[in-house]
Length: 55
Image 1 (tube, rainbow, N blue to C red):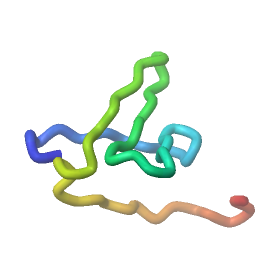
Image 2: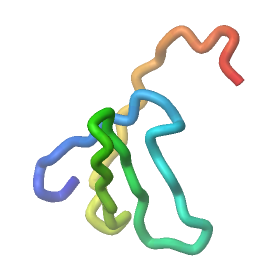
Image 3: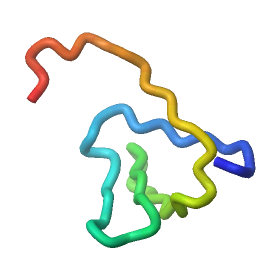
């Protein structure tokens, strides 16, 4: 994020992308959610894991 914060998305169930939204919603394990404006995202990192058997 532009402010330096990072939000981990360990699985696709932790993120929601509205079809016409200009933001994403990220959830954590404590039941909190964060609405993040796409315009403030400065980069994404994909850490490859064992995706065998993933659907």
